[in-house]
Image (cartoon, one colour):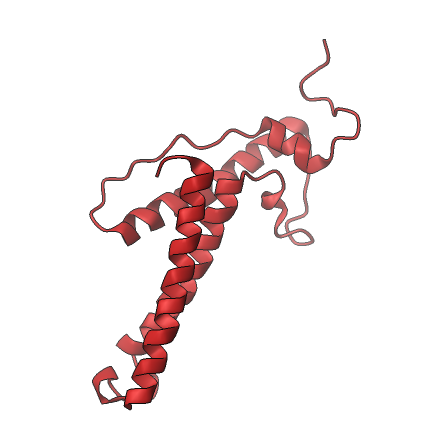
Length: 146
């Protein structure tokens, strides 16, 4: 019987890592808002991806130079982890955009913006919120139940 740590013929490093990875048990945070729940779950998935990758890296005796390969933790990641990471990127853009309304860099409060500026801000916010929701939905479908 072959050793489970040995590479199979024509198996890539990503496939080897994925074979040894374990998904995070489905988190069930007790938070009221959808946004807070999605952030908690997606953050937990991304943190787990990093911890589990390091566990597998040690178990297989692999070494990745984080300076030369900063995205090495994405090797062997599960599809739902990729969508969780993408959702957090969309959320980061959304929060940055929303901060422009709350803390105006030009010193003009939102209510004093011209109508076309407010309309453009709302249009962009809808697009960013839609992207965030789309990635959370992709996470849900890849994960199973949210």
